Image (cartoon, rainbow over all chains, first blue to last red; front, side):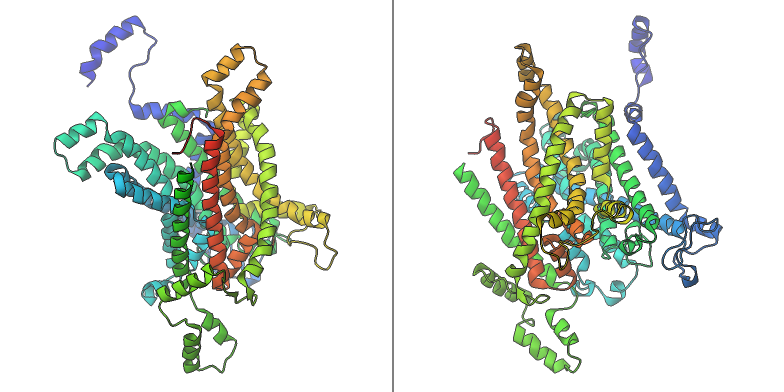
Length: 319
Length: 318
């Protein structure tokens, strides 16, 4: 590659020495991303929170504390060297619970965003590629789904009795269920955005020459969709998934706050706040920390998503 | 246009029908049934009594059969009784709806009054300090969990300053007055408004930036039109076209977003009613409440489409 373009570069450098050498697209994207200050700070915050979440067990071991162990003689302790943010209503270290809560919230955000994007991508590819009746049916289905009041539907889904849909009692009673259930139900309602997005991209790419060439060569539909079309749709999908993960974390924390999401004693930022309304009169700070963490995570994701959008598509910059 | 409208109306009707079945089925999947709750009220009931009760109330029939029976009654205007309140569903629903309408209208009016000037200013001075501040506020507004915003406002105005009530719809026992009701509305409306202002401002700003680049704006300026006239008449009218449609859709989101706000402030509106009925297994109320919210969203979608065509002569439905 370098040898092929070297004559051109040498000509150009003779003409205009100030021009930088050609750069790889990834580098260009990084340069544009770097200009978005909010996105850079957001990325920093997210990396910091992710590291805390990954090393939560190590931190617990180092502090010699258990985030789920109840100690009723130790309730509502003020901040101290041992408990930097004090203890909660059951005498557990609040800081450690916040760190473990981040593990859950970030996990739900990441996994659900990937699942949502995958469901949306498959539906969007099928809808855009086949067109006609398939497209009409899928898109009307999508419209109907969007018209649903999001939160009430999530609440109904969260209240469904797992044994009534045929889950064996052993799984229905397992403590991890609330985690997988919340990932599943949010993905079930949130796939519409990426489906519409991918459908749009598929429609425009379908008529392009390189896709038509692949069709003429007799490539299979799966190959065309996943090798020729999908890679060209990746950057908008990535932006949409980043922005979606922020919304997913908001939904998860709201459901957990209402007592319908992650079940205690497992900590999540939402369920730490469940009793907040009773303690705000005596311990207002306890209600503030988890909320600030949710807020910081979601606004960081929104900024990073915005930065990625500008970086992938310079035309949208400043809009 | 008429053909388009009737077609869309028919589509919306079908969606509501399908949704009513889906929601009916989902509610049937929730733990417990009405008989379980009756049983818990009488410890002397035997399993045979329970089976007899189930047969009496028709709970033992398959879900499809029960759904069609419900549908037949609903079409006849009978939405059943609320188990929690022992009243016909509509008797409970309508006053709650009025309370929610106060909340939504307040939030909607304030957010439009604030968001349009803010969005226009930001679009006229892109990258200025004020634009960046507005942008930061918008990002914050869409990123803050509603329940946390409500908590912060309660901590600030009810706990620290002690000037507004933390929860309720009106002072219990006191003579019901307009100012009293306003005091209870203040915090819930503020909560809903902040999130909504952020959304609307973003749409107004991006719409205006787009429109201000158009040729007809340059033409208007070249003809020497006053800058204020160019911005507020030529540009804003066109920028508002996409915004109006999005605001109509936002109303639907407001309706379900009000669920958290109403629950946080113990404000007796639709959202809280739906939430409480789901938790209390009050099937009939939850079902009608959900379907109502769904129908309103669909209706607003339709209105948005009609407005779109009415505001922009370039668009027509045939």
